[in-house]
Length: 452
Image (cartoon, rainbow, N blue to C red):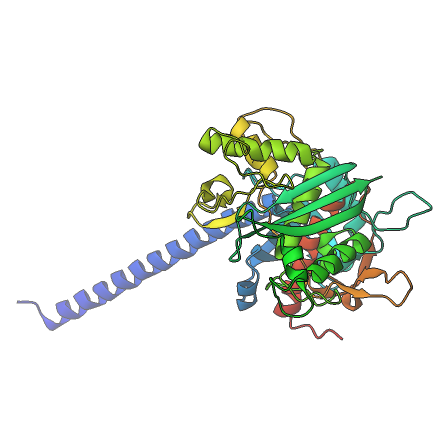
């Protein structure tokens, strides 16, 4: 039988063993945790070194990130004494034509000036390409600048007779694009654009009916057979076309999320078809894909589906338009993500290239051409408009010049720095600036900045 002394000794030994076991477990945990933290810090230092060299990094966890799906991570860098040096923001933003640009932006902790920029690897077929040499030139313009950033001026035509802002990369010719499906009134929208000396000189937005006996939308509107709120549709179409001729860039027409604009006088209708088709015409112009080539491409799509062209199918109207809605063939033009959710659509140039098995490679200025041939049978990508809410207003001059009052949903009065876009690389410069301004909008909410 165990004596009281023996029982007491046994309990003491058990307690000591339990304490030793707990100490070993806790010690092992801290050693393991410390090793994991060292490995994580090593990964951070390797990844963030191109934009900001710090002794350690801490990931930011904030509810403010919920409003910024573009941002994949925000990190604060600390020096060897534990003082914060700056922010590193990992994000992916959309270019003007829907391509994805992944990059790291480093900002000084106190001044939030840009201290580093670096492209992140992105093997996705929808990735936006910027060469290392172009990125170096863009970085030279931006590093040291206070965010947010706007352009002090846009590229202008070197012609004393014209001081219009121009969209870079346009080739002269007649360009055309039409929607590949009809609307609820059975109309198919189209835009025809003329470019001379790199400037958009004519543009027409109208729609033809899938019932070839009906009038075009503008004619029906003038006769009262097609009614919208406000002025008649034909007048609104003229007004928005005139506004584009003034500003040249559809990004400046400030389309809102509901498809309307508040800054073009007399226009209350949905301008989304006009904006999307105008952007397609611009992409076609940059690729020298003129109206004749467009019609050939559209005919090829019909041949691909039905083994007959528009004439054989009797889809041509008296004006030479191909009157057919691909509404029942969405797989032809729709782009889906991995979850089979539609994220955009391809234009005729991209669809033709896909059918032919031709890749439209990036030319270095954000556009594609119909040359080259490899296994990556992709086109210029998703047509996805990224406009601002209030970007324009009319001036008081006789020319009624339209000018930008906002960029990336930030008023020009809030801009801290101004740069000139890189010559012949407007899309690349614009997309990097968009990334920097996205960082500003996040920090503005995260730090609860009061902007006056």
